[in-house]
Image (cartoon, rainbow, N blue to C red):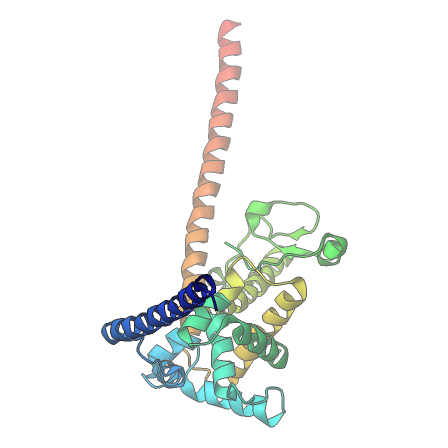
Length: 307
């Protein structure tokens, strides 16, 4: 073997040894560095999830109502009903308790799925999935916001709406008679309706108050009904129906929720403000009539004087 070949082989061996040495030094250095870099602490998501759910349900009735709009007794009874009729099923990854809790928490506060995922230590995908499962299983404005496809909007304009005196007389709006007693507090056993217009007004007022109370309680309990919807139209319909069903369930199990009285007080206060406002408007109307009468009298008087 000549010197040239021997030198080539020797150079290749030296190169391989050098690369091997560098690799070994790299791993040694990496091992030393890793000794000084603190690792991310382990997070027990299941434990934190249970702690959060317990914090919602086990800190007293008032706190529970603030968080899920019902007392624990109504919540657990709802879980029993959904389980009994096989409307919601426990899965390997999520209990019925968590599914229902996630659902009612979303309805009560109108939070997005990514927010729910953070609070329940989940990813967004299962939150979205189980929300839809529960939604189907549970199934100054008195309306619920909805994004209706243009091709079916006509279905929602076939009847008429109750309106206050401010709407006046217009197609599709049934408003009360002006200048006639209207509000419920203006009638009593001693002061019943005295003619057909007053009878119409008191029934108009009673129906309107009932509708306002129903929608007021629903929208106060489920914030999702008072916000701009971000679901498809079909899901919006299911959400509204689910809210109505859950509301009826709560009223059947725990009718003493103070929210009902709060809404009644708000409606009563609003009615009193409307009464005072209408009285002022009527007074201003009569003042305008007096001014017109005075102006007409003065015009006639001025003509007589010139003659």
